[in-house]
Amino acid sequence: MTRFSTEGRSQNQRRRIEQPGAPLSPRRICVRTETGPELRLKLDAGADLLPELARVLSAQGLRSAALQALSGHFDKISYFTGMVDETGARVATYGAARMLQGPVLLLGANAIFGIGEEGAPLVHCHAVLADAQGRVHGGHLPLEGCILGSQGAVIMATPLEDAGFEVAYDSETNYSLFHPTVMSV
Amino acid sequence: MSATRIERGSFGRSAVIRLRPNEDLVEGVEQACLENGISHAVVRSAVGSLVDAVLEYGVRPQGAQGDENTIVEKGPGVEILTLTGELAPGEDGRPKAELRGTISTPDARVLGGRFLPGRNSICITLELVIQEWLPETATLQP
Image (cartoon, rainbow over all chains, first blue to last red; front, side):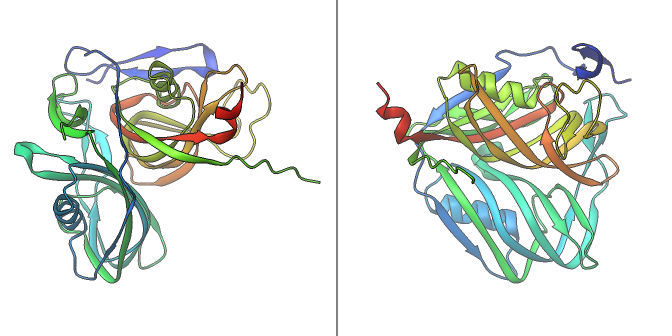
């Protein structure tokens, strides 16, 4: 059973949620880093968006970057939205994958490129999409299977040089999550 | 007659930030910047989720106490899809974040607006990269 508490007065209150693990400190983690020159990535039709981004950014010698989509077009894509985790293992989980058949337009996306499990590069991406009937969708993208259509995609990358995101187990939420980390050059 | 003000500047270092659960999205970003001496910055990318989302649209009446001009979506598990905005000193000189973006709800609707300060608790995490904006005018002041 999910438990909430409320902070603030009357109409300006917000709910807080009780996590499965004890709260960890600090509540805000911030690491400063030099920023590399911006990269504009033009991806071709047929590419699997997230593995291709991980591959080309790694090949540039980067370990972490902030990504923003400028354009994109998919033949095939699925996405996930969040929901309550009824098992109680976590406060929230993803529902079933929602499949969209192309052509699907990428209206916008934010993503973090960093170091995943066992040092493998990982892209965590959330996107807003318009389907072939013009309806708007959006959510968390699966790590594989978002296949670009004939118009490809254009992604801007802001390289992070001496710090970035690396996955670590988070006992508070019971998820493995990206954490800010100093990365020696 | 409009009076557009131009601020010349350049981009500087970045900050790699995680907000843990129950931090407020807007106030948490402001606090992280205050703690790290960042006064001006732009959002480069953000991925995360909210317990509940409260978004403003249109112009909220001054001193509004209720939910006028707001979208209130209950989670947990409201996904932050895109986030754009900046951080700049407010009237009191403290860092003030203006953040807007899009969300998806547990029943898979997509909505957008301005994230109301103090109303958006982080659910699992917020992964955020901001880049410092270095205005020349500020550095010229005595």
